[in-house]
Length: 353
Image 1 (tube, rainbow, N blue to C red):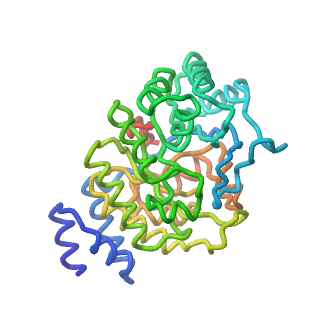
Image 2 (spheres, rainbow, N blue to C red):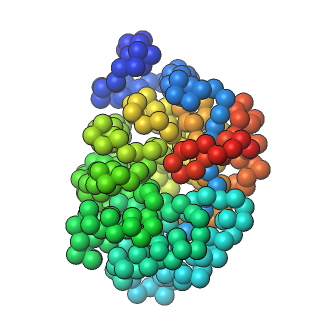
């Protein structure tokens, strides 16, 4: 079957579910990687790998949903719960701008005290002070803000956009299969809820990313179904800028699973690139994999190394702690045989490093 799949990919024809499952089970990883690399080179050439200078700002860790895979949240009323002050957030942005940063990634928990007025005020104040792209609020957060504020999704998103929200990260997708979501986070939204937020955002002209957290309780069939749902959404609205797969980090959480391997990451990256033929950009998850595996993945379909993050709190709360400065990221890209090129959140090229 691999020969038929290769012919379809080279001809630009779309792979189906059975072919995706075959690829996830195919034992020869270099063959799959080479095919995914061919697709990357057709879309992006063979010289450049992009990166962005950004900062994660987790504005709150208070969340009532209690996802089993999360070690970051604190329930409402916890003495360890926090909401960052405006001044704390502003200082973080100032530090980012000092090193040439262009985006902030703001995500937190589903905090029952934070309605839409909080975010309108915060985003508005940020935009008044700083020339920064606000990439913020996962679909789960947006759904909850709309619920708390008694707004429909479109009105909620329009108000957030007017206040300063520029684009939406794809967090909270986990696996877009409800049986998996029910096992991981029974109080969290359904697959439809996640897709509805993305669809509505795309329809009003906002761009978003999509993610996949695999390696929890999901099967290979679940992973392919997730990819197909993302692909179908992209066919409908065309609003996904990038796709970022990463593996579950079970340490320090309620999860009893064993963390998946670097081999599984490379295979998942390659198969995702081959299945998601209508999404151009694939971003490394060096935060979960480390720099060396992320570097290898540049030959398995990735065209973007992700963000030089000044801080990261969610994954590190689960015990995984990879850090990377600008110099190290650029070295890894160059050592893999590529030219690093700085981009913005929209994947517009800014300058070679």
